[in-house]
Image (cartoon, rainbow, N blue to C red; front, side):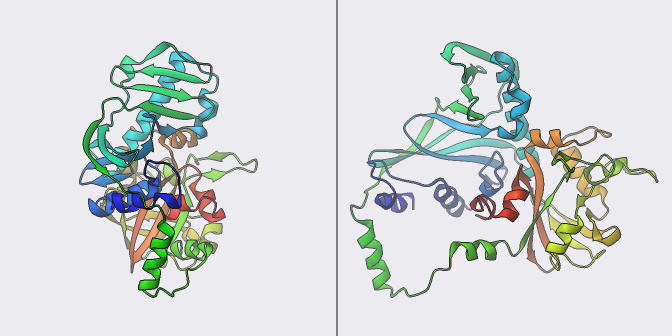
Length: 372
């Protein structure tokens, strides 16, 4: 399939190296390896097969490739340089990987790469390691004021301040296969011939309509609240910190997903009536009972509500009991919202989504990253 897609390269590029869009790579890999596609959630893994997380990449040329972005955390490192910067960015990177592994039930990670060279594609695998924080050293004489190069003894990295992006030099790549790709000189005639031979007459709907249809069975909710000045925060005694609420004695794992009035008004009928139990499948495949509850249905809880908290606070975040969740913590973890998908009668899934997903979801900007 990679060869077939690459043969159409002249539709997009004049390069002698086959063209392969990263989304096509992700979809092809997941289809033919029967893997779970995690790419649209923008976690550290693009796919999951059994308990293995796979970072899927494709590129032409330079093997110094992007592995993470941290624009949302810029204020925390913009004044750092040298070792302090490398250490901070490495800690952020490791946190993202840790959260991904815990959330999706992943034991090990690996990179699976399609490198495109003139007339061919190479299938490559490469180690996907957390950064060894104890062995970080800045590489003297390399980089500049905008680029910090460092090593952890296993891999070489560099961080671009202007792009808020961490790159890794893929040095120890294991080439598993290489195959030629014959690029059609006139793919347009080929596609036209296919259409004519199959008498294709259907009308393709506008992209806006497709986006609307794809999101009909999904809603996005925030894990935070917003003050009048736009500042985002996690309430100290509700939501993810419900265990800290006043009143009765509470289980340290009690949490709920806030379902505010404005979101309830925009998603009428998505969930069953209040206190009706439904099945909710977590990102790692575990299914738990849940329901809409509290006054006016302002909360979505597991049933009992400590189940979701035990999974998220203890198993995923690995927090000690009594630790308050803050928005800055969510920024480091790389998530601040959830997407519920209705897959059947009383059957739903929940996915924890990257910073800014809520805004993009409802403003329909960069919609491909949400609904692909």
